[in-house]
Length: 443
Ligand code: PXG
Image (cartoon, rainbow, N blue to C red; front, side, top):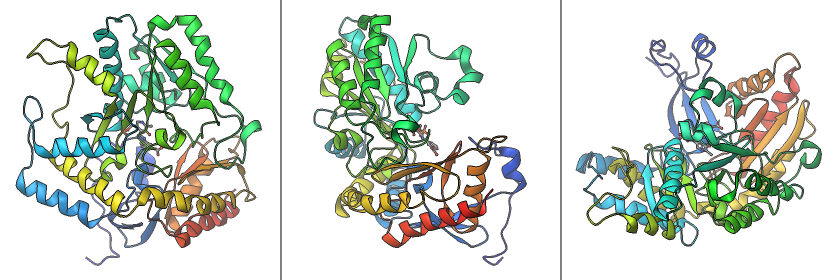
Protein backbone atom coordinates (compact mmCIF):
# COMPACT_ATOMS: atom_id res chain seq x y z
CA UNK A 1 0.00 0.00 0.00
CA UNK A 2 1.42 3.40 -0.90
CA UNK A 3 0.90 6.56 1.09
CA UNK A 4 -1.80 7.61 -1.33
CA UNK A 5 -4.02 4.55 -1.21
CA UNK A 6 -5.78 4.87 2.13
CA UNK A 7 -7.00 1.85 3.93
CA UNK A 8 -10.48 2.75 5.19
CA UNK A 9 -11.40 0.49 8.08
CA UNK A 10 -14.89 -0.69 8.90
CA UNK A 11 -16.37 2.43 10.48
CA UNK A 12 -19.53 0.95 11.95
CA UNK A 13 -18.43 -0.20 15.41
CA UNK A 14 -17.07 3.10 16.72
CA UNK A 15 -19.93 5.28 17.98
CA UNK A 16 -18.17 8.59 17.66
CA UNK A 17 -18.30 11.28 20.37
CA UNK A 18 -19.82 14.69 19.62
CA UNK A 19 -19.98 13.74 15.95
CA UNK A 20 -22.65 13.60 13.28
CA UNK A 21 -21.99 9.87 12.93
CA UNK A 22 -23.96 9.20 9.74
CA UNK A 23 -22.61 12.26 7.99
CA UNK A 24 -19.02 11.49 9.02
CA UNK A 25 -19.18 7.85 8.02
CA UNK A 26 -20.48 8.75 4.60
CA UNK A 27 -17.33 10.84 4.00
CA UNK A 28 -14.74 10.05 6.69
CA UNK A 29 -11.80 12.26 7.60
CA UNK A 30 -8.97 10.21 9.05
CA UNK A 31 -5.70 11.35 10.59
CA UNK A 32 -2.90 8.81 10.78
CA UNK A 33 0.20 10.58 12.06
CA UNK A 34 1.32 13.86 13.53
CA UNK A 35 4.51 15.81 13.94
CA UNK A 36 5.12 19.34 15.18
CA UNK A 37 2.44 21.64 13.75
CA UNK A 38 1.11 19.08 11.26
CA UNK A 39 -1.17 16.10 11.03
CA UNK A 40 -1.03 13.69 8.13
CA UNK A 41 -4.24 12.26 6.67
CA UNK A 42 -4.80 8.70 5.51
CA UNK A 43 -4.35 9.84 1.91
CA UNK A 44 -0.97 11.35 2.73
CA UNK A 45 -1.87 15.04 2.92
CA UNK A 46 -0.35 17.37 5.50
CA UNK A 47 -2.78 19.39 7.60
CA UNK A 48 -1.70 22.41 9.65
CA UNK A 49 -3.14 22.00 13.14
CA UNK A 50 -4.91 25.26 13.94
CA UNK A 51 -6.56 23.84 17.06
CA UNK A 52 -3.90 21.82 18.94
CA UNK A 53 -6.08 18.77 18.38
CA UNK A 54 -8.96 19.68 20.69
CA UNK A 55 -7.17 22.57 22.46
CA UNK A 56 -4.71 20.19 24.05
CA UNK A 57 -1.43 19.60 22.19
CA UNK A 58 0.21 22.84 23.30
CA UNK A 59 3.82 21.79 22.66
CA UNK A 60 3.04 20.46 19.18
CA UNK A 61 2.81 16.84 18.12
CA UNK A 62 5.17 13.94 18.59
CA UNK A 63 7.59 15.79 20.85
CA UNK A 64 10.55 13.53 21.42
CA UNK A 65 11.09 14.01 25.20
CA UNK A 66 7.43 13.24 25.87
CA UNK A 67 7.42 10.19 23.60
CA UNK A 68 10.59 8.91 25.26
CA UNK A 69 9.24 9.43 28.78
CA UNK A 70 6.10 7.44 27.97
CA UNK A 71 8.04 4.66 26.26
CA UNK A 72 10.45 4.33 29.17
CA UNK A 73 7.69 4.33 31.74
CA UNK A 74 5.64 1.74 29.83
CA UNK A 75 8.66 -0.55 29.87
CA UNK A 76 9.55 0.10 33.51
CA UNK A 77 6.13 -0.05 35.19
CA UNK A 78 2.93 -0.05 33.20
CA UNK A 79 0.52 0.53 36.04
CA UNK A 80 0.55 1.04 39.77
CA UNK A 81 -2.34 1.83 42.09
CA UNK A 82 -2.53 5.12 43.96
CA UNK A 83 -5.15 3.93 46.47
CA UNK A 84 -3.23 3.23 49.70
CA UNK A 85 -0.08 2.79 47.55
CA UNK A 86 1.96 5.20 45.51
CA UNK A 87 4.64 5.55 42.87
CA UNK A 88 7.27 8.28 42.71
CA UNK A 89 6.16 9.86 39.44
CA UNK A 90 2.72 10.64 40.87
CA UNK A 91 4.30 12.81 43.56
CA UNK A 92 6.80 14.34 41.17
CA UNK A 93 4.07 15.22 38.65
CA UNK A 94 1.94 16.78 41.40
CA UNK A 95 4.88 18.90 42.56
CA UNK A 96 5.57 20.13 39.03
CA UNK A 97 1.92 20.99 38.44
CA UNK A 98 1.73 22.71 41.84
CA UNK A 99 4.77 24.82 40.98
CA UNK A 100 2.88 26.29 38.01
CA UNK A 101 -0.30 27.08 39.91
CA UNK A 102 -1.14 30.41 41.54
CA UNK A 103 0.37 30.78 44.98
CA UNK A 104 -1.44 28.71 47.57
CA UNK A 105 -3.06 26.28 45.12
CA UNK A 106 -0.53 23.56 45.64
CA UNK A 107 -2.44 20.40 46.46
CA UNK A 108 -3.14 18.35 43.35
CA UNK A 109 -5.80 15.66 42.91
CA UNK A 110 -5.43 13.65 39.69
CA UNK A 111 -8.24 12.53 37.37
CA UNK A 112 -8.21 11.43 33.73
CA UNK A 113 -10.12 14.12 31.89
CA UNK A 114 -11.56 17.57 32.25
CA UNK A 115 -15.00 16.13 33.00
CA UNK A 116 -13.61 14.08 35.86
CA UNK A 117 -11.62 17.04 37.10
CA UNK A 118 -14.85 19.03 37.28
CA UNK A 119 -16.71 16.28 39.17
CA UNK A 120 -13.74 16.10 41.52
CA UNK A 121 -13.73 19.86 42.14
CA UNK A 122 -17.46 19.91 42.90
CA UNK A 123 -17.06 17.04 45.35
CA UNK A 124 -14.08 18.70 47.04
CA UNK A 125 -16.18 21.86 47.45
CA UNK A 126 -18.93 19.90 49.21
CA UNK A 127 -16.45 17.96 51.32
CA UNK A 128 -14.72 21.19 52.35
CA UNK A 129 -17.88 22.88 53.58
CA UNK A 130 -18.97 19.73 55.38
CA UNK A 131 -15.58 19.43 57.08
CA UNK A 132 -16.01 23.02 58.29
CA UNK A 133 -19.38 22.16 59.77
CA UNK A 134 -21.16 24.09 57.01
CA UNK A 135 -22.81 21.10 55.34
CA UNK A 136 -25.86 23.05 54.20
CA UNK A 137 -23.72 24.78 51.59
CA UNK A 138 -24.59 22.49 48.70
CA UNK A 139 -25.72 24.76 45.90
CA UNK A 140 -23.56 25.37 42.82
CA UNK A 141 -23.69 28.42 40.59
CA UNK A 142 -22.53 27.89 37.01
CA UNK A 143 -22.92 30.18 34.01
CA UNK A 144 -24.81 30.21 30.74
CA UNK A 145 -22.59 29.12 27.87
CA UNK A 146 -20.28 27.40 30.31
CA UNK A 147 -18.74 24.08 29.29
CA UNK A 148 -17.47 21.86 32.04
CA UNK A 149 -17.39 18.48 30.35
CA UNK A 150 -20.00 15.80 30.19
CA UNK A 151 -20.30 14.28 33.67
CA UNK A 152 -23.58 14.89 35.47
CA UNK A 153 -21.86 17.51 37.61
CA UNK A 154 -20.33 19.24 34.61
CA UNK A 155 -23.53 19.37 32.54
CA UNK A 156 -25.46 20.60 35.56
CA UNK A 157 -23.23 23.61 36.18
CA UNK A 158 -22.61 23.96 32.45
CA UNK A 159 -24.81 26.16 30.36
CA UNK A 160 -25.23 24.49 27.00
CA UNK A 161 -28.80 23.52 26.23
CA UNK A 162 -27.82 20.74 23.85
CA UNK A 163 -25.78 19.03 26.56
CA UNK A 164 -28.59 19.28 29.10
CA UNK A 165 -31.99 18.73 27.55
CA UNK A 166 -31.83 14.95 27.05
CA UNK A 167 -30.57 14.53 30.61
CA UNK A 168 -32.66 17.19 32.27
CA UNK A 169 -34.30 14.85 34.73
CA UNK A 170 -30.94 13.72 36.03
CA UNK A 171 -29.18 17.05 36.47
CA UNK A 172 -27.92 17.97 39.94
CA UNK A 173 -30.54 19.77 41.94
CA UNK A 174 -29.87 23.13 43.49
CA UNK A 175 -27.88 24.60 40.62
CA UNK A 176 -28.36 28.11 39.31
CA UNK A 177 -26.59 30.04 36.57
CA UNK A 178 -25.05 33.43 36.04
CA UNK A 179 -25.66 35.12 32.71
CA UNK A 180 -22.93 34.67 30.11
CA UNK A 181 -20.73 37.65 29.42
CA UNK A 182 -21.11 38.06 25.67
CA UNK A 183 -22.85 41.07 24.17
CA UNK A 184 -22.30 41.62 20.45
CA UNK A 185 -23.38 45.26 20.46
CA UNK A 186 -20.92 46.18 23.16
CA UNK A 187 -18.06 43.90 22.23
CA UNK A 188 -17.92 42.97 18.55
CA UNK A 189 -14.38 43.11 17.15
CA UNK A 190 -12.78 43.78 20.53
CA UNK A 191 -9.11 42.91 20.70
CA UNK A 192 -8.39 41.24 24.01
CA UNK A 193 -10.62 41.86 27.03
CA UNK A 194 -13.78 43.91 26.44
CA UNK A 195 -14.16 47.07 28.52
CA UNK A 196 -17.90 46.49 28.95
CA UNK A 197 -19.40 43.84 31.18
CA UNK A 198 -17.77 43.78 34.64
CA UNK A 199 -21.19 44.57 36.11
CA UNK A 200 -22.47 41.16 34.97
CA UNK A 201 -20.61 39.70 37.95
CA UNK A 202 -23.06 41.56 40.19
CA UNK A 203 -25.69 39.06 39.09
CA UNK A 204 -24.03 36.81 41.65
CA UNK A 205 -25.16 39.20 44.39
CA UNK A 206 -28.72 38.75 43.10
CA UNK A 207 -28.41 34.96 43.30
CA UNK A 208 -27.00 35.28 46.80
CA UNK A 209 -30.04 37.29 47.81
CA UNK A 210 -32.32 34.73 46.18
CA UNK A 211 -30.76 31.57 47.63
CA UNK A 212 -28.90 32.95 50.65
CA UNK A 213 -25.13 32.63 50.81
CA UNK A 214 -25.39 29.97 53.48
CA UNK A 215 -26.73 27.49 50.87
CA UNK A 216 -24.11 28.14 48.18
CA UNK A 217 -21.00 25.94 48.00
CA UNK A 218 -19.25 27.28 44.93
CA UNK A 219 -19.33 29.34 41.77
CA UNK A 220 -17.90 27.66 38.68
CA UNK A 221 -16.71 29.51 35.58
CA UNK A 222 -14.23 29.18 32.77
CA UNK A 223 -12.08 32.32 33.04
CA UNK A 224 -12.25 32.42 29.24
CA UNK A 225 -15.03 30.29 27.80
CA UNK A 226 -13.53 28.25 24.99
CA UNK A 227 -15.81 25.72 23.44
CA UNK A 228 -18.93 27.88 23.35
CA UNK A 229 -17.14 30.28 21.08
CA UNK A 230 -14.21 32.10 22.70
CA UNK A 231 -15.89 34.45 25.18
CA UNK A 232 -13.18 36.68 26.62
CA UNK A 233 -13.93 37.94 30.14
CA UNK A 234 -14.71 41.66 30.41
CA UNK A 235 -12.10 43.70 32.24
CA UNK A 236 -12.79 43.60 35.96
CA UNK A 237 -15.39 40.82 35.75
CA UNK A 238 -13.37 37.99 37.28
CA UNK A 239 -12.03 40.33 39.97
CA UNK A 240 -15.58 41.20 40.93
CA UNK A 241 -16.69 37.54 41.01
CA UNK A 242 -13.74 36.82 43.27
CA UNK A 243 -14.64 39.64 45.64
CA UNK A 244 -18.29 38.61 45.89
CA UNK A 245 -17.38 34.95 46.52
CA UNK A 246 -14.90 35.92 49.23
CA UNK A 247 -17.39 38.23 50.89
CA UNK A 248 -19.94 35.43 51.20
CA UNK A 249 -17.68 32.45 51.94
CA UNK A 250 -18.44 30.91 48.56
CA UNK A 251 -15.67 28.97 46.83
CA UNK A 252 -14.60 30.11 43.37
CA UNK A 253 -13.73 27.35 40.91
CA UNK A 254 -11.92 28.20 37.69
CA UNK A 255 -12.27 25.58 34.97
CA UNK A 256 -8.93 25.95 33.22
CA UNK A 257 -9.13 22.80 31.11
CA UNK A 258 -8.50 24.95 28.05
CA UNK A 259 -6.75 27.98 29.51
CA UNK A 260 -4.07 26.34 31.67
CA UNK A 261 -0.58 25.67 30.37
CA UNK A 262 0.18 28.63 28.19
CA UNK A 263 -2.90 29.19 26.06
CA UNK A 264 -3.21 32.77 27.34
CA UNK A 265 0.52 33.42 27.57
CA UNK A 266 0.86 32.41 31.22
CA UNK A 267 0.78 29.15 33.13
CA UNK A 268 -2.86 29.75 34.05
CA UNK A 269 -5.62 32.22 33.28
CA UNK A 270 -5.62 32.90 37.02
CA UNK A 271 -2.07 34.19 36.68
CA UNK A 272 -2.84 36.06 33.49
CA UNK A 273 -5.83 37.87 35.02
CA UNK A 274 -4.36 38.16 38.52
CA UNK A 275 -7.37 36.46 40.09
CA UNK A 276 -6.86 33.39 42.25
CA UNK A 277 -9.65 30.83 42.60
CA UNK A 278 -9.97 28.34 45.44
CA UNK A 279 -10.05 25.33 43.13
CA UNK A 280 -8.71 25.11 39.59
CA UNK A 281 -9.46 22.29 37.17
CA UNK A 282 -7.13 21.32 34.33
CA UNK A 283 -6.58 18.53 31.78
CA UNK A 284 -5.57 18.46 28.11
CA UNK A 285 -2.22 20.32 27.89
CA UNK A 286 -1.19 19.13 31.37
CA UNK A 287 0.74 16.42 29.52
CA UNK A 288 0.32 17.61 25.95
CA UNK A 289 -2.65 15.25 25.68
CA UNK A 290 -0.25 12.36 25.14
CA UNK A 291 -2.03 10.20 27.74
CA UNK A 292 -5.43 11.05 29.25
CA UNK A 293 -5.01 13.11 32.42
CA UNK A 294 -6.93 15.75 34.36
CA UNK A 295 -6.37 17.34 37.74
CA UNK A 296 -7.70 19.72 40.35
CA UNK A 297 -5.45 22.16 42.16
CA UNK A 298 -6.88 22.90 45.60
CA UNK A 299 -5.87 25.63 47.98
CA UNK A 300 -3.89 24.42 50.92
CA UNK A 301 -6.70 25.59 53.19
CA UNK A 302 -9.23 23.40 51.41
CA UNK A 303 -6.89 20.42 51.39
CA UNK A 304 -5.91 20.76 55.01
CA UNK A 305 -9.48 21.30 56.15
CA UNK A 306 -10.66 18.10 54.46
CA UNK A 307 -7.64 16.00 55.28
CA UNK A 308 -7.30 17.12 58.89
CA UNK A 309 -10.97 16.51 59.58
CA UNK A 310 -10.73 12.79 58.94
CA UNK A 311 -10.26 10.39 61.85
CA UNK A 312 -6.72 9.04 62.19
CA UNK A 313 -6.25 6.12 59.82
CA UNK A 314 -9.47 6.88 57.94
CA UNK A 315 -9.77 7.83 54.28
CA UNK A 316 -10.54 11.56 54.26
CA UNK A 317 -12.09 11.96 50.81
CA UNK A 318 -14.12 9.14 49.29
CA UNK A 319 -13.13 9.87 45.75
CA UNK A 320 -10.54 8.73 43.20
CA UNK A 321 -10.03 6.86 39.95
CA UNK A 322 -8.26 3.60 39.10
CA UNK A 323 -6.09 5.71 36.84
CA UNK A 324 -5.52 8.74 39.10
CA UNK A 325 -1.87 9.64 38.41
CA UNK A 326 -1.45 6.74 35.98
CA UNK A 327 2.29 6.16 35.55
CA UNK A 328 2.26 6.86 31.81
CA UNK A 329 0.20 10.03 32.23
CA UNK A 330 2.43 11.19 35.08
CA UNK A 331 5.60 10.51 33.07
CA UNK A 332 4.14 12.44 30.16
CA UNK A 333 3.18 15.34 32.45
CA UNK A 334 6.66 15.60 33.93
CA UNK A 335 8.29 15.59 30.48
CA UNK A 336 5.72 18.06 29.13
CA UNK A 337 6.04 20.57 31.95
CA UNK A 338 9.85 20.40 31.62
CA UNK A 339 9.52 21.00 27.90
CA UNK A 340 7.23 24.01 28.39
CA UNK A 341 9.85 25.50 30.71
CA UNK A 342 12.91 24.67 28.60
CA UNK A 343 11.36 26.08 25.44
CA UNK A 344 9.72 28.97 27.31
CA UNK A 345 6.50 28.16 25.48
CA UNK A 346 4.18 30.22 27.68
CA UNK A 347 6.34 33.29 27.05
CA UNK A 348 6.40 32.38 23.39
CA UNK A 349 2.61 32.29 23.28
CA UNK A 350 2.62 35.73 24.80
CA UNK A 351 5.13 37.01 22.25
CA UNK A 352 3.21 35.59 19.30
CA UNK A 353 -0.15 36.84 20.57
CA UNK A 354 -0.06 40.34 18.97
CA UNK A 355 0.74 38.84 15.59
CA UNK A 356 -1.97 36.24 16.05
CA UNK A 357 -4.44 38.97 17.01
CA UNK A 358 -3.53 41.03 13.97
CA UNK A 359 -3.94 38.05 11.64
CA UNK A 360 -7.28 37.02 13.16
CA UNK A 361 -8.69 40.53 12.90
CA UNK A 362 -7.44 40.65 9.32
CA UNK A 363 -10.42 38.42 8.52
CA UNK A 364 -12.82 41.10 9.80
CA UNK A 365 -13.90 42.32 6.36
CA UNK A 366 -14.32 38.90 4.76
CA UNK A 367 -17.87 37.87 3.81
CA UNK A 368 -20.19 36.56 6.57
CA UNK A 369 -18.00 37.74 9.47
CA UNK A 370 -20.00 39.04 12.42
CA UNK A 371 -17.30 39.23 15.08
CA UNK A 372 -13.65 38.47 15.73
CA UNK A 373 -12.41 38.06 19.30
CA UNK A 374 -9.14 36.89 20.77
CA UNK A 375 -6.77 36.61 23.70
CA UNK A 376 -3.36 34.95 23.91
CA UNK A 377 -3.29 32.20 21.29
CA UNK A 378 -7.05 31.81 21.12
CA UNK A 379 -9.32 33.43 18.58
CA UNK A 380 -12.94 33.09 17.58
CA UNK A 381 -14.50 34.23 14.34
CA UNK A 382 -18.28 34.37 14.50
CA UNK A 383 -20.15 34.06 11.22
CA UNK A 384 -23.62 35.18 10.32
CA UNK A 385 -25.67 31.98 10.32
CA UNK A 386 -27.64 30.93 7.28
CA UNK A 387 -31.23 31.75 8.18
CA UNK A 388 -32.47 28.28 7.32
CA UNK A 389 -29.50 26.28 8.61
CA UNK A 390 -27.60 27.45 11.70
CA UNK A 391 -24.13 25.95 11.87
CA UNK A 392 -24.08 24.90 8.22
CA UNK A 393 -21.87 27.74 7.05
CA UNK A 394 -19.21 27.13 9.70
CA UNK A 395 -19.26 23.41 8.95
CA UNK A 396 -18.63 24.13 5.29
CA UNK A 397 -15.78 26.50 6.16
CA UNK A 398 -14.29 23.78 8.37
CA UNK A 399 -14.48 21.26 5.48
CA UNK A 400 -13.01 23.63 2.92
CA UNK A 401 -10.18 24.68 5.22
CA UNK A 402 -9.39 21.01 5.74
CA UNK A 403 -9.32 20.49 1.96
CA UNK A 404 -6.79 23.33 1.81
CA UNK A 405 -4.71 21.71 4.53
CA UNK A 406 -5.72 23.70 7.62
CA UNK A 407 -7.63 22.27 10.57
CA UNK A 408 -9.96 24.64 12.41
CA UNK A 409 -12.77 23.96 14.93
CA UNK A 410 -16.28 25.24 14.81
CA UNK A 411 -19.13 25.41 17.27
CA UNK A 412 -22.45 26.61 15.98
CA UNK A 413 -21.39 29.33 13.54
CA UNK A 414 -18.25 30.27 15.42
CA UNK A 415 -14.82 29.22 14.16
CA UNK A 416 -12.26 28.65 16.92
CA UNK A 417 -8.48 28.77 16.66
CA UNK A 418 -6.06 27.54 19.32
CA UNK A 419 -2.84 26.40 17.67
CA UNK A 420 0.13 24.77 19.38
CA UNK A 421 2.30 27.36 21.10
CA UNK A 422 5.21 26.51 18.76
CA UNK A 423 3.39 28.04 15.78
CA UNK A 424 5.46 30.27 13.46
CA UNK A 425 4.50 33.64 12.00
CA UNK A 426 4.13 32.05 8.55
CA UNK A 427 1.83 29.37 9.90
CA UNK A 428 -0.32 31.97 11.64
CA UNK A 429 -0.62 33.84 8.35
CA UNK A 430 -1.47 30.64 6.52
CA UNK A 431 -4.31 29.77 8.89
CA UNK A 432 -6.08 33.10 8.54
CA UNK A 433 -5.27 33.52 4.80
CA UNK A 434 -6.92 30.15 4.26
CA UNK A 435 -9.98 31.14 6.30
CA UNK A 436 -10.27 34.40 4.37
CA UNK A 437 -10.11 32.69 1.01
CA UNK A 438 -12.62 30.04 2.08
CA UNK A 439 -15.03 32.69 3.36
CA UNK A 440 -14.91 34.30 -0.07
CA UNK A 441 -15.95 30.97 -1.61
CA UNK A 442 -18.78 29.82 0.64
CA UNK A 443 -22.35 30.99 0.27
N1 PXG B 1 -13.95 21.97 30.93
C1 PXG B 1 -13.65 22.73 29.87
C2 PXG B 1 -13.50 24.20 30.05
C3 PXG B 1 -13.45 22.14 28.62
O1 PXG B 1 -13.16 22.90 27.57
C4 PXG B 1 -13.90 20.00 29.63
C5 PXG B 1 -14.07 20.65 30.84
C6 PXG B 1 -14.06 18.52 29.59
O2 PXG B 1 -12.86 17.89 29.37
P1 PXG B 1 -12.85 16.38 28.83
O3 PXG B 1 -11.38 16.02 28.94
O4 PXG B 1 -13.68 15.57 29.73
O5 PXG B 1 -13.37 16.42 27.43
C7 PXG B 1 -13.57 20.74 28.50
C8 PXG B 1 -13.39 20.04 27.18
C9 PXG B 1 -14.07 22.16 21.49
C10 PXG B 1 -13.88 21.08 22.51
O6 PXG B 1 -13.77 21.97 20.34
C11 PXG B 1 -13.69 21.44 23.82
C12 PXG B 1 -13.54 20.45 24.78
C13 PXG B 1 -13.55 19.13 24.43
C14 PXG B 1 -13.72 18.77 23.10
C15 PXG B 1 -13.90 19.76 22.13
O7 PXG B 1 -14.48 23.26 21.86
N2 PXG B 1 -13.36 20.87 26.06
